[in-house]
Image (tube, rainbow, N blue to C red):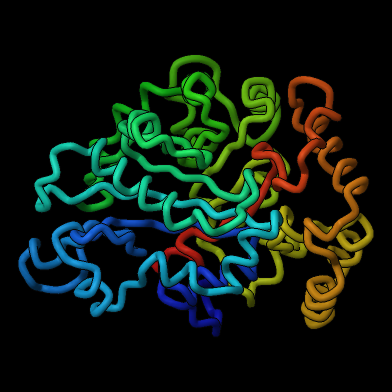
Length: 371
């Protein structure tokens, strides 16, 4: 939620929050944990809130009925929401699913087997849904992700997030412990590793490509502008880049770089970016044409609000756009972002969604993390 906004966001990682994100931006990211009775639950933190002993707040040690009684939604309940699943199946929207590993209190020593159980349950839950191939990304911070994918036979697109962070503890401590992993891995190294593993996306923190921290990696740095951006294009090609956080003042730069933003800024009352341009939150699922972009950027105040509403109601969703127009749009993106091969090669199977290398805005935990 933005400073001074009257908008009251729904609780993160809940069905209302995820519905808001699916409507307002190009898709959502959410977290799943596995309960003691094998149900996937929508929850991020390592322990449930409260003052009880850790064992009484650890989802992996509680059955799903107990967890749900504390206000945590089941993944299967989300799948019963028709609006959410229809948007997911449309080929316009993207859903990123982060698999969380257990707190040490659960004493689950075999992380790979735990992730395999989560992946198996996830795929079983999605069997009845006709999801486009490029509508879903499964990931996690654990370095065991690739092994779990191989053992489970997960067919959904997947990747590993970087830097590798410990799955429990205070955020500052986790980042401190994760510093060596961050320092030792450059963007080019991450891309090579993910390509080798057959992963179509690199999920990484913003510090890899922006700020002074990007300069501490081995090799030449990348950035969002200038030579660093050209270097990023040359090494990423058609690889999807999913980056968090996504400050509003960098939003347009990141989109112009072909980056998918995992954003906490999902406030519908924010109509203008810090640079004065209109904010359009669905570049991937309901793209603006040039005429609309000019009209919106030339507007201000109440007129801009009205025009944004008009654009939302009149512009077609990605899957409703004629295939020839979609193909031309993707070919233009391929040329702009220096993808390998002929641009025409990226215009096949558009019913499966935009290629992973295209820019999107994804709502972190649905309606954004509440800080």
